[in-house]
Amino acid sequence: MTEVNSLHTHAKVYIGIVHQLREMITKDGLQPGDKIPSERELSERLNVGRSSVREALRALELLGLIETRRGEGTFLRDFRDHHLIDLLGMFILQDDMAQEDILQTKMMIEKEALKALFSEKKKMDALREKLSESENLDDVFREIVMMSSNFLSQRIWNILNDFETLICGEKKLTAPMKEEVIGMLHGIDQQEKETVQETYKRVRKIVDEDATISNIFF
Image 1: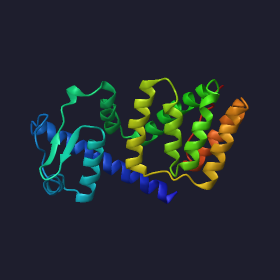
Image 2: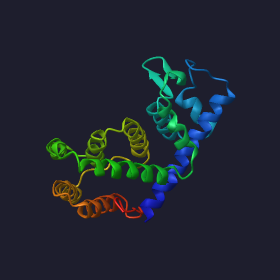
Image 3: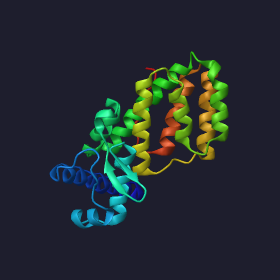
């Protein structure tokens, strides 16, 4: 439990730095294309460690809000050229409960994608191949989500997953996880919704024992 609390504390500090960065950019009147201060200057102005600043900048770059040019520095990007869904990241950055919100929203999308597979059994071979070559649990769920026909859900899932990875790190596909996913795919083959529901719960509980997972189909 100490490890979980430490993770939550780290996430809170980290998101707080992103808050400060955003406020500083607004206060300085920076516009798309303008260069932002260096890591060292940001560290001094925000009174935080350079490693923390580096993580925060990485998050903003991942969300498409800034870009780093080798040998030149870091610059603000033009948000007007972005699809609206890319700006969802700004909501995430402003919410103190970001980690829980990300998890719950990701699970909602994954559940719907799993339900869709019951009528797409022809895709199961490709999914099994992905499972056999993957070392990361999110790679498997990304494949499941990408098999759905909901493009908006795909975009949202990718953004949420990238941000969660920044906070929590990658989720390695352990042997117990892989066995559960194999069972989940078998349940889809056999049209056993209850089996899929229960195996999905177990997979997510392995990842986060504190996650509250609602029923998928009922």
